[in-house]
Length: 67
Image 1 (cartoon, rainbow, N blue to C red):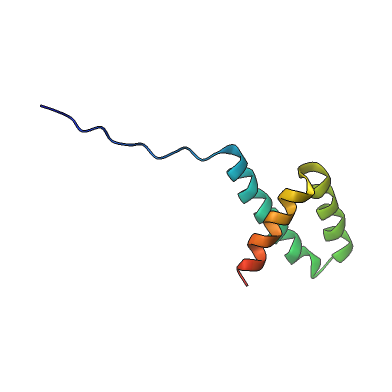
Image 2 (tube, rainbow, N blue to C red):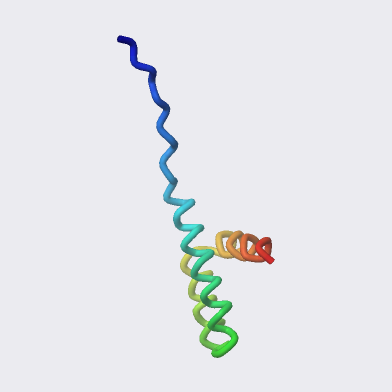
């Protein structure tokens, strides 16, 4: 009996997971900003410093597309 090869889906790349996490984190900070703008700005600056402006910018682009 001949078995057909099944193609396995590509595993999620680490960069993709990081982008999903970062987008969620920035979304949380936007909610925080309504009650504590200073804290939200400080934590956003920390995220940008840790993960880079390009990744943070992509996360913001993703969030803006949802509106």
